[in-house]
Every structure is written in structure tokens, then in C-alpha cells.
Image 1 (cartoon, helix red, strand yellow):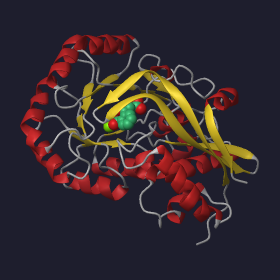
Image 2: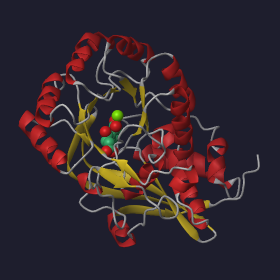
Image 3: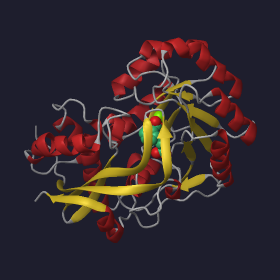
Image 4: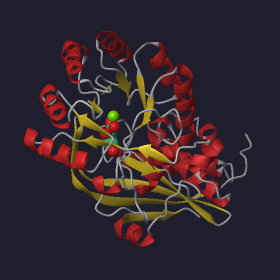
Length: 372
Ligand code: OSB
Ligand code: MG
């Protein structure tokens, strides 16, 4: 295979960033994040990629140390063998390595950012996206008490978020959802995310969520339980949305076809990159299935990229693209994302449209490996 001309990955770096408050989901609690970044160069122009793998393999099989290892030992040698690699060739060049979508996505992202910056184009313009503002949703973790949860939701409502998502798990579902619905009233869009915490035995219980007029229930069952999700979708009025299950265009098409997925959460890292995410978006448009852009507690690098992607018309529901200050005291980009009237401005600058704050970046860096 001859890859089209493109850039090279020149640096791998790990940073550590504290969260403003603990974020608890059904798979664990996070108080800070270690994040792997890749830097690419093309004709002297820099590009950055962010790997969304978590500290531990608890959301999916990927995790920071595993991603760093597979990038060094398997992915970079395959890219280097091509010389320079165009972002559009990365998924083909790396196809021989099974899995590791988040590691692959970070490399494709860095190369794509460099390519777009080298030609002065924004990612949204590259995609042909025309929206300049997108609605912002916020993901709210599991709280120690109902009072704490209601306090947090009140603050997000006051900040103007266009949609609230509550993390749920067995023992933290009907009661908090009822209380939040009562607090916010009937009109503010509300949805829930279980991160695989339930089983098929809970289908009757999950159907009781129908009382709260939710936009959707996200990934209630394990990622490989397509049949269970189809059974739930057939029984519940609340649309079933899949996150963890959707790892490729094929898995999205199949889940939709089988009636297991009525709404798609599109996360670029989970599917191997922004270019595949775009193809899943196009599939959703073709099938008439609503889609929205998920989040993985990204820094301003990944969030800017998500906002560009979410500017595509097929993202018909608000995404998990909240203000930088919702998670970070200090972001690693200049001019991090803010929410105004429940909306976020789609970046218009070259590449993914962020500007890395190199001073902050150096302060939070744990290690750097230069690759040239
Ligand atoms: O399931 O959507 C999820 C964060 C980390 C891992 C998985 C998920 C989440 C979120 C946060 O819900 C969304 C965000 O980044 O704002
Ligand atoms: Mg989710």
C-alpha cells in the first residue's frame, strides 16, 4: 500500500489533570485524569491528537498505559514504515492491529489536525458542516445524596444547559430521575446513562423509566448484549441509545437493523477516529436514526474536535459537550469552551480549532517522548 503524503507522529506525552469535582459513574469514580496526547508534524506545522482512554480499563478494554504501549510497540512502527501518512490512510494502515480504537484515533487525530492546519481549513468546513452553534448537554455523575444531586442539577440548569444527562445504576435510578424531573419541570430534555450496569432481568424495572419522559436511556445492558437491548427497545417507550456497543460502522448498522439501537451516541475515540465517526453519522442520517456526539471527559483539544463534528446536521440531539469549567479548573487550551444560552460556538480556526497553552501543558506533563 502506498499512503498519500501526510505528516509524521513526532511526540507522545502524558498529562495529569485534576477534575473540579469527583465524577462517579456505574463503573467507578474519577477525581483526576491521566491523558495521553500525540503530536504530529507536517511541513513544520503541528497537530495534536488526544487519546480518550481512561486511567483504568473500566469503560472499555482500553486504558492509558495500554494505549501508550500499543502505540509505541505496534502502531507507530506501522505508520513509520509508510514514511509520511495521510490521516485518511491511518485506519487502513493500522487495520492489521485488532482493537485499540482509542489509541488509533489519537494518531489519526494528530495527523488530521496537522493536515487541516497546513491548508488553513477548519475541521467543520472540511466535513461540510454548516452549523455555527450547537446545543450543549451536561453529564451529571452519581452523587452521595439526592440533595447533592439536586444542588448540582440546579447549578447546571442556571448555567443554561440545553439537556441534562444523569448517570444511573441499580439503586440510583427511579428516585433520582423522578426528583430531577420534578425539579427541572417537563420541558427541559432529560436522559439517563447506565454504562452497562443492568441485565436482561432488569427490563421490567427499566420500563418504569417511561414515567419520566426521557429523551433516551443510554447503554443499560452489557456492550455485547444486542438481543437484550432489542428486547428492551421493543418493550419500553423510552428510546434505547447505545454507546459502548457501537465500535464501528458495521456494529452501528447491525444494532440499528436488529432493533437494538434507536439513537446512536457517536464517540470518535470509541470507533477509531473522527473519520469513522463521520461515516457513522452518515449512516444514521441514511437510516433516519437520531444521533448525538458523546464525550469522554476530554480536554479542550478533544472537546474542540467534538464540537466540529457535532456541527454536522445529523447530530439531531444535544451532545455531551459541556463548558470546559464543568470538568477542569484550568484547561490546556487558550480560550476553552464556554456555554452561552445553552450553546457552544463551533470552532472556526484551522485544524480542530483549539490553541494549546504550552505553558499550562508543560506544567501538567508527566512525561514526554520525542519520536524523531
Ligand atoms: O458513558 O458517556 C459516557 C465519561 C467518561 C466515560 C464514559 C462516559 C462519560 C460521560 C461524560 O458521560 C461525558 C462528558 O465527557 O461530558
Ligand atoms: Mg455513555
